[in-house]
Length: 400
Image (cartoon, rainbow, N blue to C red):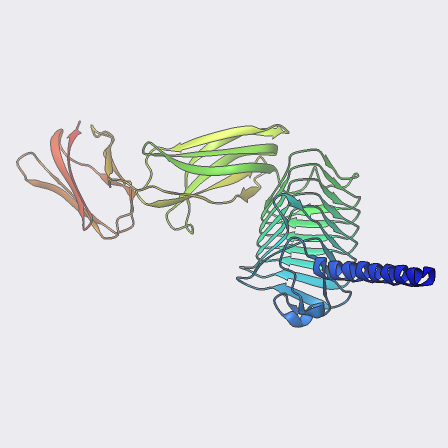
């Protein structure tokens, strides 16, 4: 009877141990997913067990030397921690999105040496982004890192899109960073010796900048760190606001406006603060905007003539079509005419005396919203009619 009880106990223990092993095996299977071949993320054939990672509780392991793994256009995935082996490329295609973690679920991305990450769409990392040496990072889309960006030596970054790092930016020696887009670092920036910064974009660092005696922080061609630039409709005027985190050898802003986001014309200037490491806020008012969608941009000009353009801001400025005629009374022999829209057809300008006798007549081409006309009239009061297919105005002018 005692021997039988022992056998039962041993058998029960074996069952319990087997159950624990199966539970651990099953738990590992559902929480860890492995990519074993190159191809599209949505292809079950590249995943061990055909199990595509697609939720924040599933970690992703990418084996070494596979080639390129791509999150395709229109595909959107949220996963857990991602560990990418050496000699691989991860590409987020234009229109694709990969979330590593989620709000309230901090997850990180780590990669071994000789890896490349192409962000043409959107990559959001809700923790740290840590990579071994020889990283190539290309961003033409949007990269958001909620934690730190930590890179070993020989990192090569090419940014023409938007990069936001809430934490610190850390790189070892020989980091090569080219910024033609926008990079915002919420914490500190620390790079090793012989690191370089180039490009025509903006790199803003909220904390301290340390470059181990390289030229990264002090003498790169990014004299103005722009924090934001906005345009808004305020009681019939367009109000532009922006702020800088720092300025270096800076002369002035040129404010430019466009109706098609292609051809811009200067509408004003605002003087800068020379060289400063503190925040400065600026405003500019477009008191006579065109009655349509408008685009504004800032051009910065240094004391040495270096110029730099920043991101375009837009505003839909709908309203009644109007024309301004000035100066009135007319002095100096010229009358200025300015529309708050761009006429789509030819515009007739006709001036008569008070009894209707025609004195001058002129036709202007379409798309002209501001011009001057000569006035060679005797002193007196006259009627000016301005008319196109979409607009008509009648006003009195006084010639002195």
